Image (tube, rainbow, N blue to C red; front, side):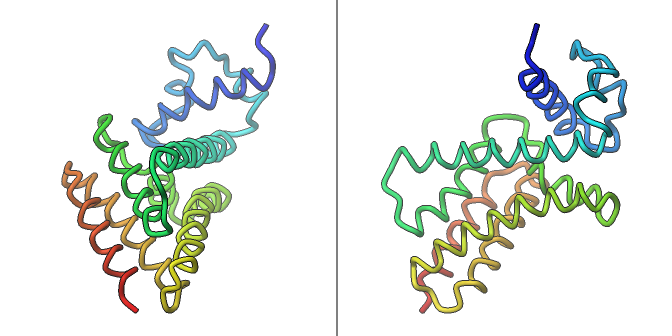
Length: 187
């Protein structure tokens, strides 16, 4: 018998893929259960609602992204600027690796707008963490107004994600990295 935490992880992994490719609103309960081997009862035992499942999926995405970033940084030296640029490189690699469905957290923000504040809050937490990551690197770089620069870098990141998804091209990530390099070199 699969342990509760293992079953929960199995559910999250399955629904994460469904939500990522189908969208949150489009993926109804039957769609989430299809092909999973998970019963409705088991799903609700681990997650009291679809929103709780979405929140867990967003947290899963955030963890996957952090792991990919750590892997990227292990493979080379990492100055503060390289740490920032690595975020764009990780997202670009995800774009190139598979049929790019976009940033999972950004999709949640856009799909839920002002509905379901807990889902929105969970998705925003992914970006808040990324903003803190950028801020720490900007402080290490000793750029003027590091908080403002970190926000500008986060805007470039979000813009690159949306532009790449819309254009089906990795070029926006390359252009955003160039812009970040300029932002971080300006005194």
